[in-house]
Image (tube, rainbow, N blue to C red; front, top):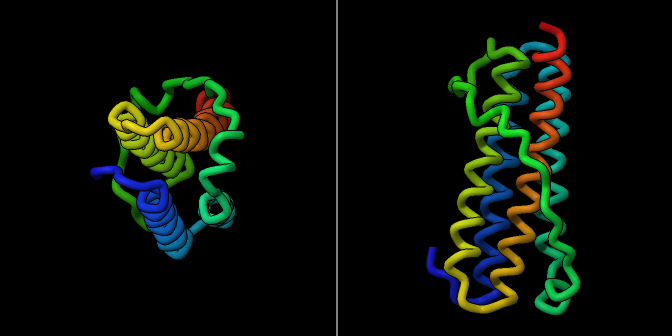
Length: 150
């Protein structure tokens, strides 16, 4: 993606959030267990909140954004992702979602490196932080529900 304006960047990010909302919605319909449906609905809602945040963001607000470093547990980096299916288990879902968040981190990180304007770089860094936060939440859930129980 060639970044030209703040509006184009926001539009691109919103489209990515809408895609994530749809993917999680499709997975909610596919899931067979109540626990899986609940987690997927929570992830879908987080993406909706992220979209709303982007819709409300202005160039002036970007200047006041606080970009903090988010810990990366890197748990999902070493796990194999399975394609979504109706019989996927909780572990598979966590891996799939964490991998999806990592792909977003990599995309926004790459765009931040290429951004020529300071406010666009900061916007991409903010988006990286948001996606890393989602990944961290998923990896902590994996650590608690999968690693600690085995």
